[in-house]
Amino acid sequence: MGLRSTISERQRRLGFELKHLREQAGLSAAEASERIGMGRAQLSQIETAKTTILTERLRALCDLYGCTDKSYVDALVALSEASGKGWWSAYKRSMVTDALSLAELEADATEVRMHQSLFIPGIFQTAGYARAIFNSPGLGFDNFEAPLRFRMERQRILNGENPPRIRAVIHEAALRIRFGGAQVVREQLLRLVELSRLPNVTIQVYPFSAQAYAAISGNFLHIIPSNPRLGTVALEQPIGYQYLGESFHLERYSALFDLLTENALAPINVSSAPEAHSVKDSLALIQHLLYTL
Image (tube, rainbow, N blue to C red):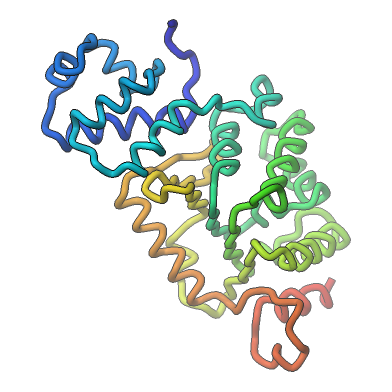
């Protein structure tokens, strides 16, 4: 089988985990490959995600490395056996690998935590709001119809079959920045209120008056699959996404998200009685912004 020309984040993560297990076991690549009966070059290609690994070989490696966590090994097998195909496959020629990887990770998530400071999160954006962003000067989008369709399709995780839990903290600045005219912003704010009605969606606004944790955390998504050990943090950057998966990264961003939720306003809750909004909360701030439009 030939070597891969492009590598998804799922494939890269499998190779990283296997290399990490080998190093924890104190084995060199030469020692591990000899004891498992494969060439050293092949093991190196597996660890760098350039080629696939048979399921029995994967389980044999985990046994060799002394990994006794069955749920974790089964999760590694699932990573290995996944086809990588989904609705995002139709965009292979028009979207970069980072974006396709994000969609694949989200599709397999049981929970997604996110923080955005200057934009409404992509999976919450209306088409009008997203179009206004793509039309912004300096972003370099000469033809953004495919990215726009891709962004809209990502939203299927919100209310599909067995949707993941979505928890979002959005900075007040993102609600105030005008992408598009007043009507576009109004529709976007109302969309947030509408989405908050979904049982799996929790949206909090981080006000200007709160502690500065939002400033130091940056924009990120913490994508958590059925085995949290294989969670991924996606850092959103102008040139694409940077993916982090080491345990200390996952722990750090989990703690950061807890700080953000603790200091943010109470979640949007349209089902509570009016008197329940006597204190400042996310819905009250959005209603105030709607009034000013």
